[in-house]
Length: 124
Image (cartoon, rainbow, N blue to C red):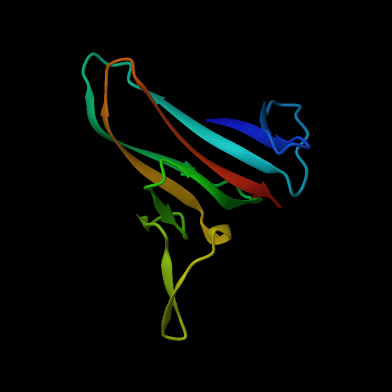
């Protein structure tokens, strides 16, 4: 997994700065987490599942790619997004800040091909 601090200049252009061992990260900053999955095998991968946890101290804010994903609010059971919960008998979407992990189904990954999944989270 790779992580990048997301910053914007005065014109609104984004810059992704790689996070290293000594990179300072402050409360309120947005970090983009990327998972790269490469098929090093000798056959095409017909279907694989990629799962990424949302780190403790970070809250999901979106920018989920691919957009079709599953999520978990308890770290165990994954359901299609958005997660809906019952509040006083009414179905409501669970705020992204309560998500604990994301899962994608990747289909048809050719030999040597790389699939990229990513999301952004705000540091608390």
